[in-house]
Amino acid sequence: MIFSLNQSNFTIPRCSSKITDHRRSSPSKSFVLPPVSTPKINRFFVISSSKPLHVSSIQTLGSMHSLEHDDRRVTSCKAYEADRSAGELVVEKIEAAKRAKIGFYFATWWFLNVIFNIYNKKVLNAFPYPWLTSTLSLAAGSVIMLISWATKVADAPNTDLDFWKSLFPVALAHTIGHVAATVSMSKVAVSFTHIIKSGEPAFSVLVSRFILGETFPTSVYLSLVPIIGGCGLAALTELNFNMTGFMGAMISNLAFVFRNIFSKRGMKGKSVSGMNYYACLSMLSLLILTPFAIAVEGPKMWAAGWHNAVYEIGPHFIWWVAAQSIFYHLYNQVSYMSLDEISPLTFSVGNTMKRISVIVSSIIIFHTPVQPINALGAAIAIFGTFLYSQVPHYLF
Ligand code: 3PG
Image 1: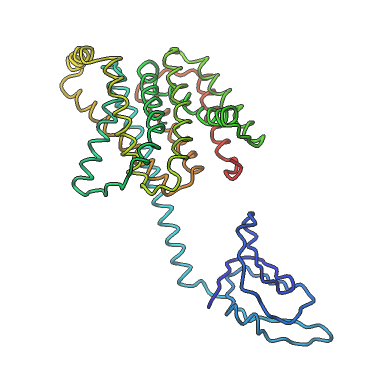
Image 2: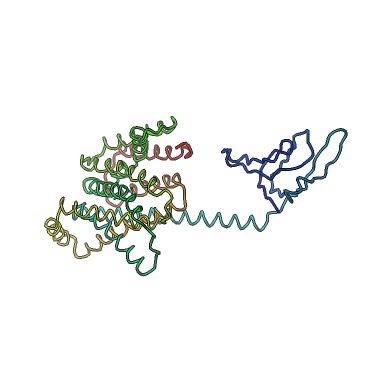
């Protein structure tokens, strides 16, 4: 039996049977060796190693050679420095592959999100019916996933009634957040919607504090100051400010906070993959949204609007609609798949970085006029979101 203790300075008080890895702060992270039946030792026994240390056998700790030096009994245990073993190289390779995989997920997620935002805005400029475009995004995802399950490209999830019941509040919040963000983007610049959406952590803390009664360390509350201040400054100095656009982004923030809370509760103990979870979410959201979209906008308005858009843009307008719908599903699917691989903390850092790429690329592509004070507000808000994500997650 070989134990490998990497790069740790550790102390065995009185040849204690408990060895703690000091790189980890949590007491629960220590590991316990089997009881040792060594003769009584009167001294602390310190082993310092900067290289991997292999204890040849835990059992032998119990039958170590005991030597008498004067009146002290010193226990020596056989240990040797290992060269960088093949095992370590394998571990390093696995770590590197994991990092590459997460990097790939992030790059894909941001890229798909930027493409979605560009086509979504192009469509909304020509065809200002956000309730229909939101419905089409969910429909595209539902169709893609149904085909994937039917053709066995992806395994269909094993769900029961309880799963769908627990998914309902998540889907309701997802629907509200999605349609509100799309309404926002139909009224204001994409960059402005995303600047306001970077304030989502502030909503998360306020909802948890005032509705769920949770408390947070002061550092969390302090990180909200630049988020709220930056969003406020950006909103006050936005050249094309529109109240519906602003409120849409704010409602989307609130709805997504509830979606995250319900989703955390609903998914406890369930074993549906991130990809399939998002697929089921899309389908249920589609069922919820369709009647409302018909009631708010309706086929008559859509037909007239479609006619105008095709007249102005040309027949390829349909490809813009297809692109915004498909890319919406793909970026969400990749983001849920990456959630399977990373911690919520890493996810929230990724989401903040995503907003920066969307804001910058949309300003360039749509030639959005930006005043320096407006850009400063956006930068402060984004920086605040980054600070928020840096607060140790175990505090939450
Ligand atoms: C939507 O339409 O659902 C929103 O634009 C999504 O916003 P987010 O994924 O960037 O939070």
